[in-house]
Image (cartoon, rainbow, N blue to C red; front, side, top):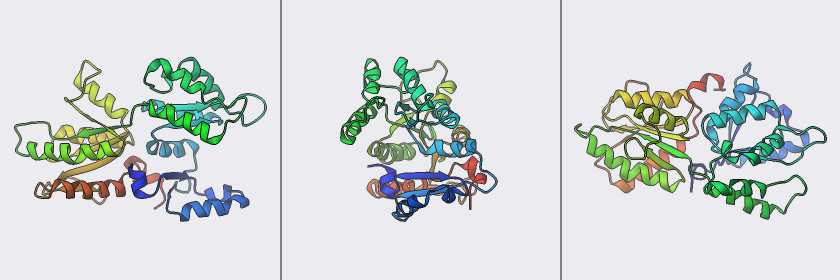
Length: 305
């Protein structure tokens, strides 16, 4: 189960203003069927913003894994964006044209030589063999066979990280209620939907300094859940960093918290300790489903209204 399935929109399509004109006539019926199925969320860039780099900046936050097939400089740029957020890049070597290799083929050769530069595989020594099993250079295997090999590789990658931001000071009045909400509502939902939760102070540190650790982990997170109960400055700083990095961010707070921003621009889930944990989990999951694919805050000006 994941939020995209809960939304019944497993596909997010980011398009330029004249995207429909680029679809061949014999493919338009397929496109319309997909859009009308309610399984595709279409996000369109504003007129005048028809720049490939902007399109890729919009695309990257919605993906957790990049599968690179063919392509040119744009594919390389998108791969760099994924890499900068420590997201896996899986290149395939299928030959789409005669002549010089395309970017996907070039990256495949580099990944075979050093897979760890492209994705984190466990156990590490099995990465090259798993990628080699996906080769499409000489022949195309049956779809079901390739599907099995591909998802076997993906099953050995780390689950995407959900970074949990919340009140940490045990001397504060709301600490116990916040921790209860995190432990009994947020974490179970993250686990059920395929994320691995990360909390400062509870997980093993990779860096010597806490601030470095926080921002390194934030940078490589796919989702941030920021609870602002207590209005702690560090929580706002971490939330702001997530927004600035175009990371999908869900904001929560205890009912009665007076937030210093317009919640119509940044929706907030207000929870109450008087409601059962089961009901909170149900309503919070629904809130996430409705808000997880909101366009990144810093890119709103680039999108069609």
